[in-house]
Every structure is written in structure tokens, then in C-alpha cells.
Length: 124
Image 1 (cartoon, rainbow, N blue to C red):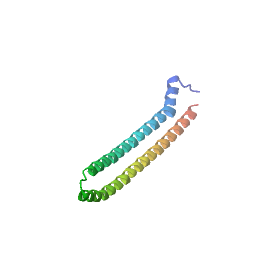
Image 2: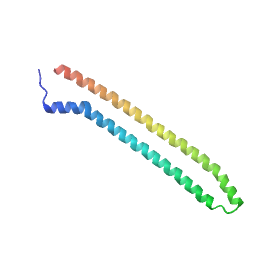
Image 3: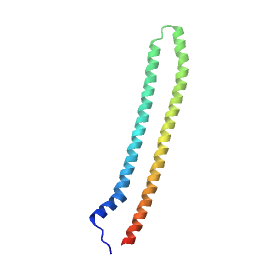
Image 4: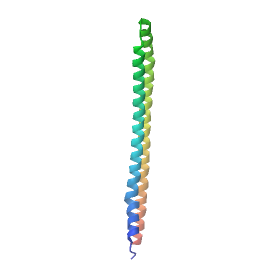
């Protein structure tokens, strides 16, 4: 029977437990960063739009200016609706990418664990 030294045990522990945990943690951090940045970008765009509209309203001096401002609101509403849809699509895409990568990571780790278990049973 072959004995396993401390370095081999440490390497096996790392390969079976710590490496997959690190890979999954890295995937989660990457996803969180992408979602946070998407939300930050969207929030900035919405605030910028709101501020621009407030400034436009402050420039209204007469009935004609009010009519022009109100007509512009239709375009702003349309642009904002398109932005919201684009932002939602971006988040869905990020979530789908995360799911696919996490499934692949899980499959790879299960396969690696099975191979390691088979190798260990043959050496025992």
C-alpha cells in the first residue's frame, strides 16, 4: 500500500476543495462587480436625465416655452423607456452568463472530483 505524504494531501485538499471554492468566489465577485457597475451606470443616466429635465423646466419663460418643454417630454419618456429596457436586458444577460459559467464550473469540479476519487481508490 502506498502512503500519501503531507504535500500530496495538501495538494489533493487544494485541488478538491480550495481551488473550486476560489474559482466560485472569483466568479461571484466578478458578477457582483458587473451588476454593481451596470446599476451605477443606469443610476447615473437616470439622474443625468432628471437633472437635464429640471434645468429645461427652469428655462421655461412663457407659454411657447412650456409647450416646447411638454413636447420634449414625450421624447424623454420614449428615450427613458428604451434605456430601462436596455438596462434590464443587460442585467438579464449578466445573470445568464453567470448561470452558464457557474454550471460549467460545477460540472468541471464534479468531473475533477470523480477523477481524483477514482485515482485515489486505485492507489489505495
